[in-house]
Image 1: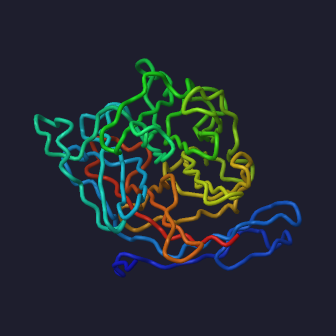
Image 2 (image 1 turned 135 degrees about the vertical axis):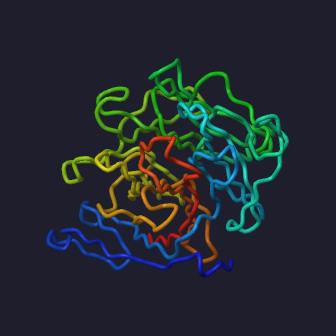
Length: 357
């Protein structure tokens, strides 16, 4: 696939921590990890990265910002689902669930779907209102009416009530039906990630170290043999004493690349300056994850992604073996920016990741 060269930057990096002093080998283009001798560690290299958004906020229903997203490639068609907010925003429930499509993963069209009426007009790409969907599954084994599955969060109750995890199904990725019962009755106000892995569904959520909205944000995990009835999650990743004291993890962007290799790209929120960077971790079983160093996988960009980077779920194979396109949402505003001061913020970019394992 040929790319517009002016929109791509090529880079790799060398871990710049005290790992060498600890006797660990540092590989060009890799991140290192403290682990037992003899354990194999994947080597990650970012080969290319967009410098301008592939899709940006430019419609009235996006006049505040665009947020969580995921891309799936099915045959020759690229599908993108994302959430958007306008200035009627009061809580994250006030979101527009939107759709875009592409033939190459670079140039995106926001089609007129004539499904949802926005200010009396259905000439838009809105699928529904009020459902913060962030993770999607194309399930060929499911009944036709459930071929697509989506996972997101909805606030239970009013005010500062918990955000339970809900699901939705669709026959075509366009016409969606929200499930009546939540998948998980536990607070998880983030981009919840779910995918089918053999005979189980894996679900990665946000938890709080001190209970709902108390303590620090951490990544949790649970699994179920069905698309529902998930048991209580357990913590699988959190910042530790060697991380900056104001850093917390939440959005996990977990994906399975192949048998015996899962990657996680957790968002690291720095609460002092309200910026967000992305880190990396890996697992052999989808449950126990090891940090790949302490340096961010991506640094801040100079435009749409200058203050926050949120990697999206999923990985799409590139042209060369061992390479994957990873999409992400970028923001040029702080995590808790005042909505009145924000206009058409955010965009969706991607990077090409080489994985040697």
